Image (cartoon, rainbow, N blue to C red; front, side):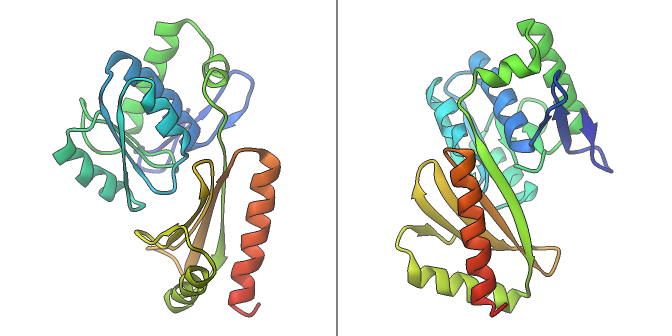
Length: 215
């Protein structure tokens, strides 16, 4: 595992040298914790993989979605008494410990999972439903981001505007575009049920965004 600068986020590398995104490692840890704590609550952002719903359903657990951001997740975890909270960027929260990101705690949970199961991380991941996600970004002002969202709302019927805009094609295929809260960019997130569909989806909507911005 490796940590970010202040140690509250973490990223995994499995026994074959494959880097697991924050989404995938969160799915792994959540699945492990739910097996021991069925009928729990999980809080995660709108841009996290839909596979979490499939994992939660196995233990009659509930997924609650928030806007993007660790503060949004933390603030929802407290009143909901959630067992788990996570972001796709490697931030993981374990409610029984604390409702904030904690890289050292995440490391301890990962070691516990490996020791308890006796299986390598790659074996653990292969047992979960496949997840195909990616993200990108485009330079863009807040005003330009509003233009993108407005145009996409005109072209689509099934969307969520809780945070930017999330275009939902079905439960396994979606794209989300939201202005960054810290930089003059718009972030583009996507999930699909295959690598090919994911590539096509990102290509199509990156071009669409640039077209709306007259680039």
